Length: 78
Image 1 (cartoon, rainbow, N blue to C red):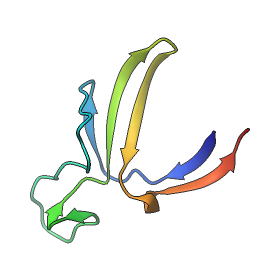
Image 2 (image 1 turned 90 degrees about the vertical axis):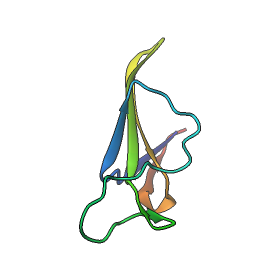
Image 3 (image 1 turned 180 degrees about the horizontal axis):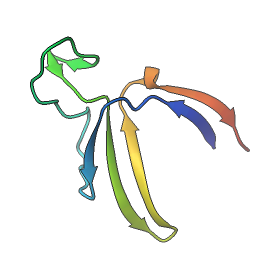
Image 4 (image 1 turned 90 degrees about the horizontal axis):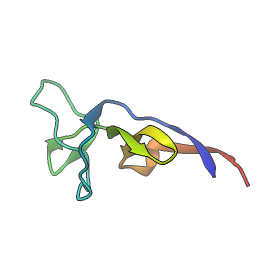
């Protein structure tokens, strides 16, 4: 298991819906100013959040980031 510091930034909340086809964060509504993450000129969220989802071990939320520069591994646990 790896424990990491992750910069989630401004996230889009999917709540309990599931989208397994998502390959990049969704677009933000139009706003003024420069954007941090862009894809082909689109202003994107930094991450997405889903949950709470039910599993045998309880409920959990999940954050998904799409660039490797947003995560920094801190500890490796055997």
